[in-house]
Length: 73
Image (cartoon, rainbow, N blue to C red; front, side):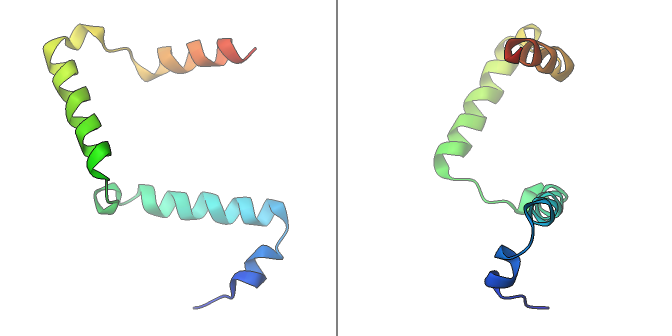
């Protein structure tokens, strides 16, 4: 199925956001297929090394999320 971009751009904001969510979900379901730049690869390698050297420094996502949400208020 092929849809002209103009047709997509004429959709309501709500419908375009839903399309974006669905596109994002489809990409997230296959993360190994997403290419990384060399800079992103180096940064991931650096973060892995940092974590291996001090795993206790890691914070659970729930803690980080809560801290960020409090900062927004």
